Image (tube, rainbow, N blue to C red):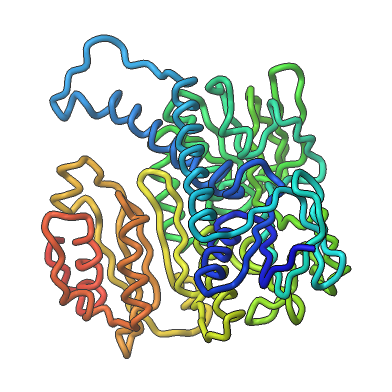
Length: 465
């Protein structure tokens, strides 16, 4: 029987990063994966392929809408070669996955192909290509999540689809009806709107992406409506049916009146749920809560020698959150004392303009009775934004009214996914708004908006508005 210091079940961002860190710390490590490729949802049917399509569709939109103003004349019609767009996406995924294979070899991690299932707290049965039973002193559960749905929806994965199928369509929809105005629905909705599809987003809540600061939600919807996306808020979906190539979605509006939406595709993006199928968790003394998550303590322990990380435990379902947890657990096992400040894990939507946030929202600060001050700066006031024609959005910094410590940062604009790291870094070191305001920022850059927002929060003295 093969014996390991640690076994990781699941090879997504949390799992494979945990495996690398365990190996770095001198542990004999096994990584168990039931799918044909490593990388989990993120690399195969999530983050990486969706960003590939977002970038490709963005290039197309820029070519058709902005080239002429930039003085670039393109002779003949600009057309979408959708099969090539999908092929490029597949190649990006393939290259990225091969990179994970390389990292496993480099770090001498044993990769076992098959479904990992607990026989007891220290023995894992693998069913599949590398069928066997292994013994592990410690185990990390990193089985991730799977697309959620509604009980009455029949996901045929042809016309009524999840994000997985939306990344592999053989044609551009004529009308894509999106159920759910969260990250996945907005990103993929924008991809197909750019490519010519009519897109209708049906959202149960009063605003899109309700976990965001309300100002970000409002601004993102305004920009996407300008781009042609139609939004139907406070609508509760009650039925989805398909007849041939037509999908009909029925939803009640806030007055209770039934509304119907007809499209050729319906993307169901109502969140994700933890994946524990086949894990046989109870055999190892692991408890699942009513949400299907593995119950863990503050050290992410599910049992004395078993840990769980990422989407399968409480908290935001984010790849980088899973990575941080994977590293933390590996270091706990090695006897170190790592920590994660969950308040400082950024949230990003990769639409264009991008949306990014970290820390507390205004709504959260008000609810907690925290006295705060706000500084906000519009992207249109930046020379860099005007030069690139990316003038939508703003950056907002929230600071404590007395100490000036930065409590939250909320951004919508070009490269917000990169800019948010400045705020994370500042908040990790408990910087004040004035600290950031006094830092030199290169000109012209998008990052100058962070400095200006900090200036506005410090003494209401932004320089360029």
